[in-house]
Length: 212
Image (cartoon, rainbow, N blue to C red; front, top):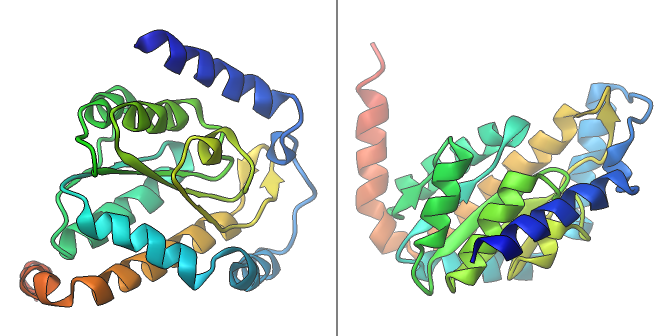
């Protein structure tokens, strides 16, 4: 069972090195301009139909595993919190080995939400592949429509700036991904408004307890 995953991961790494657009640093743009550009592009890459399709499988999922690494981990934490606040059963392991084990144990109908700017992060792609092998749905959130992650996904949400500065993605990509998570969870809320009402009240109570 393990060999195909390792092989796929290796090919993902070589794919990135062979000339993925994000494999080379590009000249920096002003942060505000890049962020506005990334958000403007969402109207083209992120359709209402794609959001609804992804939200529908999340709504039906008995369990959800959220996977990410590096700078995408902050987006994953936001997604996990929002999904849990809507009453979803969510696991978002920080350790990639734990994430892969959790993904491998997903039942059919469950969902792995995999987040990666490049779509070629080995640990995240491996987690998504293990989820697919287990019979789960995979929703990928990435900045590139063509990537190892999108190839293994049942639903792909494309959003984000594609610039790198010194080998690191710019803030524009994460802003676009955070906006996408917000749009996805808002769409999910329309599908489970009654179910989510109680857990949203719980979330509000927990948040209120931390104010003075």
